[in-house]
Image (tube, rainbow, N blue to C red; front, side, top):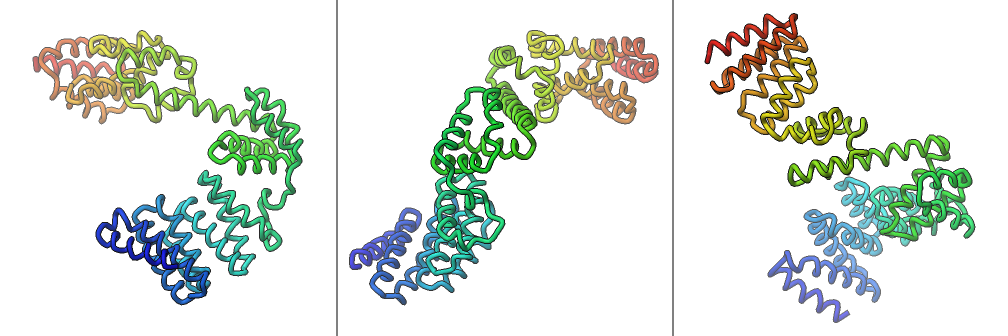
Length: 418
């Protein structure tokens, strides 16, 4: 006791001088002192000391929940052991300010502990089940297992419906090994072949047991837990079809991110060529259209239609603008818009992008947008660029009789400004 009191006195002085460095240490010493005082029957002192520990750790957890919330929950548990009413109130106050599976689950787990100690097994079991669910969702397997163990200790007081891990009998070693073999199969085809023999509660219980036994190394087990549930619900074939689609999407997104992050043109082209089987697919095209930047949208489109080498010629301004003109005359409006957006990404002040976006809008029949973009282009265009744009407009007027009046008028306007 004397040592605990001395530790509090020393750390209080340190925390007064430098709270950022020593306040957490003071909270630990105050919490320890509360436990010592309670152990020797000094209940009133222990209660006051426990409340001080809660107050200090509440300040710390407010500033940094990830670092100090679990410690705050422990201090509230200690307070609950001294005075259940005050402890319940403190738990409620902490929970009222929290959001998210890990914070709420962490505090509920400690409240389950406290309620079990206080002789309230029904409430303890309810808290423990919910804490286990939330901590499982958060991926904190160690804390989840702790919450599940509390629930198992008071299982006879649980109210239905119960999660499988709580009501199922422990699986046999044979079933556990069968599940291990399934999880460790090297290919999804082999995995699918084994799945039909695992469509029962014992197999699911074995997966849950293995997850609890492998904290920090349970990612594949968690994937198989979902897969087994879907197999039982939807059938093996449909579950594996959905899994393969999900994995393909994940692989595609990862490859796209790595391609987009390439540091230079040569690295980018090499990566796209090397991973063409993943990147130049309809699936990848969908992601690029929705999330890609203008440069990579254009590169991806041309790479799919004309090859990777042709796509990376777009890095050259002259080649890009030649293809723009050809696409406009050839009525490839999508390509015109992609290349114009790419051009604008390289130089937002240049007139070429709004010029071709105006052409694309005209070809789509969007006259107001077409006129606005052309007007912007006409105001920004350099004198030396006008002849080539007039030539494009004359070719467009010839190629697209329905829009000849518009393109001829634009050509005359640009020609008259030279």
